[in-house]
Every structure is written in C-alpha cells, then in structure tokens.
Image (cartoon, rainbow, N blue to C red; front, side, top):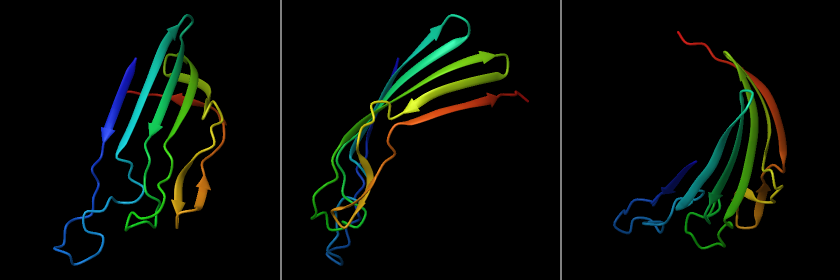
Length: 130
C-alpha cells in the first residue's frame, strides 16, 4: 500500500503591480494532486499493481489572468500484472483502466485536448546491477 499527496502553490511573483498577473496561479499547475495504490505479491513470481491518480482543477494553458473556467478534476486508475525471473520482468496492463474521459491540457478556455482512452500495455524489462 502506498499513497502520496502534493500541494503545489504555483503563483506568479508579485511585481508591485507591474503586470496584471501578479499573484495569479500558473496555468496547468493543479494545487492538489494525489496517488494511491496497492501492490500484491502473488504466487509464482507474479505481482499485481492497482494505482489511482487524482488531479484537482487547474487553469488552462493560456489563462494567465485566471479568469476562464477551470479544467475539471479527474481520477484515473491504472493496473499492471508482472512476472519476474531473475533479471527479466514481463508485464502487461492498462492505463486509464476504467476508460475515463478527461483532459490534461486545454487552451483558451474551451479548446480541449483529450487524454488517451484506455491503453493496453505490455513489455519486458531486463535489469542488471553494476
């Protein structure tokens, strides 16, 4: 079991009124985000991971004055099953397991760029210690 939380106070510096953006949040920087997951060690050198990623609302890419509608918060879930034998690990899984429709980037308020739908992954890792 693991979890982490990030509180990010990303604001533009104060310029004594030199710009209209003084103290505004930096676009595409959510103030709050968190991850949580479970890892199960299964028989036969198998491991199963289940991980949730949550991101709070944030301003779109071009919204330096923080006046447009914020991008909505989202929660996505990833999973991975892996098998290890000595230095070799084979794995398969899914990112955005629940096929959540969300976006990580937007500009000019309503111009959104959808994130990937469910993505199936598979691969191999070979680890050496020097």
